[in-house]
Length: 438
Image 1 (tube, helix red, strand yellow):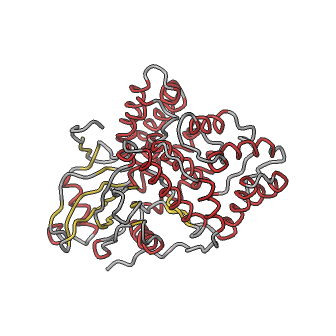
Image 2 (cartoon, helix red, strand yellow):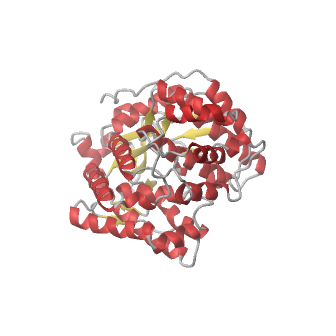
Image 3 (cartoon, rainbow, N blue to C red):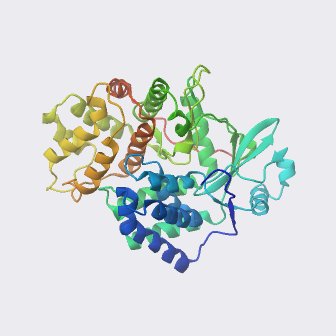
């Protein structure tokens, strides 16, 4: 969305099955047809195709908007014109009017007037996402961000998932994952995202886990409900701001981002599965904080056995132990049939681990694009891979993380950081109980 463009107001989400099915079908047809060639391959009309997809996805919200957001930061994969068009989905152009938002907030707090709940509440939202929109407000003398869930969004998400299963919407998204595995995992995560009391508990937990140079905003517990989440308002540079700065600064931020994600996975056995660029802020160097983490609705909690098996797989590739590789792949549950080609998987993993195997590797050029195309078009195991639920969300995180590092064009000792992360003791934190309402 260009600077200064007014946000369009929407009256309600489409929750009529027939209308939403037709709309989803149009988006799916675009993703699977001419538009995917224009958007991904950068042929003529990429900008127009991207704008059309962005408009449809923003209007429908829900799963379709999430798909567009995932595409919007695949720098090096999409054409620049298409990325620019889809990037509008990161903050949303279509929002609910203030009167609707006021009613939603007051209903969530049993009719208490919004003027009593907040000292001030800005009518224009800061951002509009796939599940809710965020408003700036003030309470207890503090500036806060209030995320208000769209009405009937859970019903909408269930409908989207049903439609996606019917029309095979995810078939063209560049993954070897069985669409049903994607939908089952996405369904579980999306339903959790609709519970803002769970997100509040996740946020509090991650704030305790990551102290020091990683910051998580405080939760204002007495202003939270299942459909309203209030947190401290924080800010900083976006990843696109940092991408314009010096190579030294881009490298520093990229290393901090990667180290944070790696420790989250391999030490705490929990990670935020939505690597949306808007979920990260970066304060200026010298203020004592490297990364600010936002939005803990989509958190994947892992079992110790899964993380430890992942570490075995990572070590086999990092150390070049081809003889240990087959058992390591079986250990993480990736083998889906007797036709699974371990040699092909070894080559794919060596390509995926190129940043960790190459001293001074810089995320630039065609690396992200080449990985995308190898997984989408050149994977002999596409029909023979099993992906347990955790891998669906983990792959989304890891591919998204690499895309963010590509936006930065960052270089660091990726291999050293990964080795330190997998050497740490696995101490699963486990999913916390949802925040109890005040």
